[in-house]
Length: 113
Image (tube, rainbow, N blue to C red; front, top):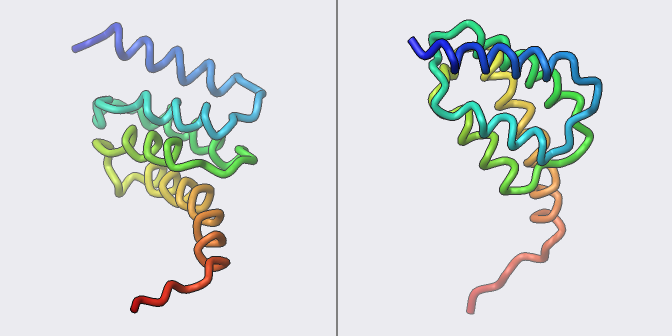
């Protein structure tokens, strides 16, 4: 079923694995967004996830809200109990949450009247 899609997923996974460039936050968000609707039963999808996990860990930038939502959206139909998905979610949270948390802590509290 869908042999063309399987071949494309394999080719993209191989290209990403061979890529020596460190992904920007936008490249990471776009890559994960591209996984939306992938068949969670395909082993090749898990292989691509493993490559993207490595790319996510290497990424030196914080994810902005758009990049964060793209990343999560792409993972939404995959199995949350897969180690690759769970680790990606943790990396995304780390790369998207720190800046937001720091900004909230610096703001003075609002007083309601």
